[in-house]
Each structure stands twice: as C-alpha cells, then as structure tokens.
Image 1 (tube, one colour):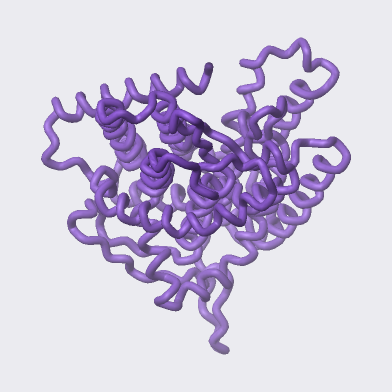
Image 2: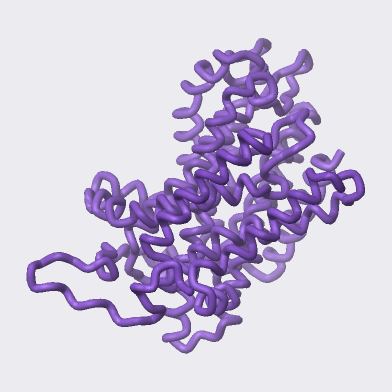
Amino acid sequence: MSLDERSRPGGPLRPRPRDGRVPYDSRILRKPLRSSPADGHPTVHRDRAIDGLRALALLAVPTGHWLIGGLVRDADSALHNASPLSSFAPLAPITWVLQMLGIFFLVGGYASVLSFRRAAERGTTPGDWLRGRLARLLRPAVGVTAVWAVLAAVLYAAGVPVTTLHTAATLVVQPLWFVLVYAVVTALTPYCMAASRRLGGWAAAPLAAVVAVMDFLRYGPYADSVPYWATLISLLPGWLFGYQLGVSWGEKRLGRRGAWLLLAGGTALFALLLLVFHYPASMVGVPGQDRTNSHPPSLLVIALAAAQSGAAVLLRDRIAALLRRPALWAPVTAVNRSAMTILCWHQSAMLAVAVPASFLGTTVEGLTTAPDFAAWMATRLPWLPLFAVTLILVTRVARRLEMPWTGVSRGQRVCAGALAVGFTAFALRLMSV
C-alpha cells in the first residue's frame, strides 16, 4: 500500500480550481534553465525545489570537510590529517546537520525517475540512458585523479614532502567513494521504480531492515564471530535507502502523510539509537574510535536520512516559492551546473591554501595547527571564505572536465584513465595502511 493513497503513479494532474488555489500535484515551480552550447546539455525545465535541495546537500560536503578536517604541520613542514572530533566530542552534533547525503540520494532518486521517463518518451533505451548518466558522473572523477597523478609528480619534484603528498592523495580520493556508490544506485533505477509501483513508499523499508540486521550482527552478542567483509553488506542498502525514497517520491507514491511518518519515525529512531543503544554520536568516522556510523552506514544513518527526507518532502513547496527570488535562484543554478566538480575538487581547494602555508616556517592558526582544543573551530571559520573563493577559481577551470570530452582522442582518454586508476590505487593503498 502506498504511504499516500491520494496520488497514483503516472496519474493525471488535477485541474486548477476556479478559486485560483494550486493543487498539490501541480505546485511544482518550474522555469527553463538554459544551458550554453558548451555545456553539452539541452535546455531543460528545472524543478526549483529539487535543485535547491541538491545544492544544499552538495554544499554541506565541502563545508563539513573544511570544518572538521584539520591539517597539522610537523617540524619537517609536512601536513598530516587530524580531526577536532577526536579531542572534542561535543562537536559531534555538527555532523547531524552537515551529513546531508540522505537528501542528496533522495533528490537523486527523484531526478532519475523524471530523467528516465523523458528518455523513454524520446525512445532512448535504458542502456543508453544509463551510459549517459554514468559518463556525467565519471568524467569529473577521472579528471581530478588524472590531474593529481601529474600534479603529485610536479609537487614532489618541487620539494613538497612525501608525507604531504600522501595526505593530499588521501583527501582527494576520499570523497570519490560517493561516485561509485551513486553510479551503482543509478543503475538500479528501473528496479527501484518497479519496487515503488509495487510497494509505494514502503519499498525502502526492506533496505532499512537489512541495515538493522547487520548492525545487530556487528555490535550484538555475535560481533566477535562476524568477519569484517560481512559488514559491507550494509553498504548498498544503507545508501540506496534515500535513493529509493526519492524514486517513490518521483513516482508520486510518497506524499505528505508518508513524509510526516518519515520525519517522526526517523527522529524517534535517531534518539533511541543514541540514548538507549549508545550509537556513536558522530555521523562521520572519528580517528581512534572502533565504531563508525558511515563506513558502512549504520541504522543511525538510516534514521537521519528518513527524518531529512520527510522534512524535504514537507518543505518542498516553501523551498520552491523561496527560490522564485532571482538572488537565491542564481547561486542554486550555478552550484547545480558544477555539482560534480565541486564534489571532486573541494579538497584540492583546501590543499591549495594549506600546502603553501606549510612552508612559512611556522604553523598558521586554524589552518595548520592541531585541532585539539574547543576554540580551534573559531580559528578555522575565517579560513572557509578563502577555501570557497579558491574552489570557485578551481571550478572555473576544472568544470571543463565535467562537460563532454569533445575533441579528446581515444589515446588521450586511455592515458587519462590509466593515470586516474594509478593515482586512485596509490591513494587507496595509503588509506588501508
């Protein structure tokens, strides 16, 4: 049964009442967002609320990494990773706000449904649709790792310490796990749509159940006998949960009643897991802690994604109305046009500031000092605007890698792919040590 039986998948929109009120199904504020020919994308109609939610979730990623990802300079001018969460646990609630991947997967599922339908109407096969979506995902990831493969060699020749290069490689590759996971869930779009038509908004419930069972095995009485590889079973269901909710939303099988259930149920489960079952408070991994909520996602991640998704569905119309203001809509448009570039290059922007500062002969407050005190966050905040400006400058150049690689020969693409694979393998090996 659908969580909201008032709407049927694929059903016609209700006509506008004579009193001028706009029914729920047709209150989607749309406006043509014209792309330049260089973008490689045709003119499409944008859903302002969905684009606004995507931009919000996307910007939370660099903000979170810049706030709770410190870089410490040692006596040899080398940079090491550090986190203020290791020494100051009360900062953990910040991660409840900045961990918005549930929203990202929600709007991703919603947008994929609309894109899949438009492709089917044009006669595009599911395979061609998927290849197009994957190309848009993988181009920026291949681009950033290929560039860093060359840049690392140049920096090494220029005298940058090997430890700094190891730190940089880890930071650059760290966000790219999202690309692989998102590519897999995107490939499952037709199956998610079928599940939604059969089960409605409840199609995401089995995914949450799988994560709950794995959490019990990981942390319950049988934890010592469960191998680590078995815990990775939670990886796909944990992140597919939000995507499946988005698919159900796009299929009009998730309405306001279901959204209230998600918001209330997710919030209650979140509190229960923290206060009764003593889950780690941080939504991201903390160095030195045995348990983590994010690798793979725990039931706490599911609870947060449910609450966020419910709030997003309930606030959709207000967000759309707010984004009718040009001053707010313009930055949302800019962020969405460079979404993957921002995701792939935001750590590089921070490194572009921190690496030169490591050669100043002393530590720089809030930039290369150890985040081992509560006031460190106050010294970190002033650096965020500089990181943001640097990212904007980097994006103006790197965004070309997000667009179709026209004029690039097959040999050049193979070379870029080889560099990307080599650099990624190098970084993953460092992360496993």
